[in-house]
Image (tube, rainbow, N blue to C red; front, side, top):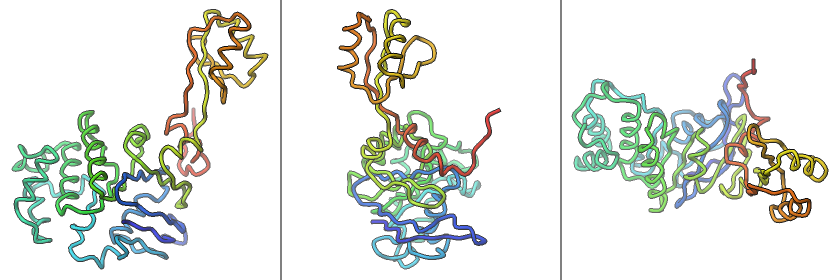
Length: 303
C-alpha cells in the first residue's frame, strides 16, 4: 500500500503540495488527476524519494522509499519515458537495472516480451519512438515484479493498440492484488481504467472517491430530446423547461435533471412527435473540468 500522510512541499515559500493525504489501496487502479501545476509529479517524486518533503511523509508499506530493501521489488515506477541513455540497447538498459537488485537475467527477457519489445531487444534506444520508450519504461517498472506501481502518463505516445494494451495490463495487475497509481490527463481513458480517483488542485486534495461516486457527485444528468417539428418542441420546452439548452446543429435540446418518462409523456400530451429521447450523464472529463474549475493555475485566454 502507498500512503500519503499530510504531505507538503514548498519551493521559495510557495506550497506546491499542501497537506495532501490519501492511500493507494491494493487490488485497484487509482487515477491521480489534477490540472497542470496541481502537484501530481512532485507528489510522485516524493513517494520515490527523489524530492524531500517539507512536512509529512510518503510511505510504501509503512516505510519511506529510501528505507526499503531492494525497492524495485516493492514499487515500480515510470516517471519520464525520455530519461533513457540513447546509446544503450533495450535489453542492456534493463540488464543494468536488474543487476542493481540482483534480479535473474531471465527477468529481462520476460518483461520485454510482456511489453511487446522482445523483437527489438538489441536495438539502440535512440532509434525508438516515444511509444516504444513508454513500453520500455513500463518494462523497467515491472522488472522487480513489485506489489505497487506508480505510472505518470503511461499512454503518452502510444497508438490505439498500445492504449488498449496498457489499459488491460493495469487492470490485470490490479486484479493480481497490486496497488496501481496512474497519473493522466486523458479523462476518457481514466473513465474506463480507474476504479478509484484522487483529484488534487493547487496541491490540495479535492476528491478521494470511487470513479462511479465522483461521476454521481460532480456529473450532471440530462435528457436529450429531438422532435419531428423542432419549433413545436422549442415552444413546449420554453413553457415547461426553461433551463433546456439547444444542441448546436440538429434541432435537439438538452434538458438538465429531467425524467425521460415524464418528458416523453409531456410531449405526447401536447402532440409533439419525438424522434429522440435519451438519458445522458456528464463524461468524466466534463465532471472533472467543472469540479476543478477554480483550481486551474494556467488558463489560456480565448481570442
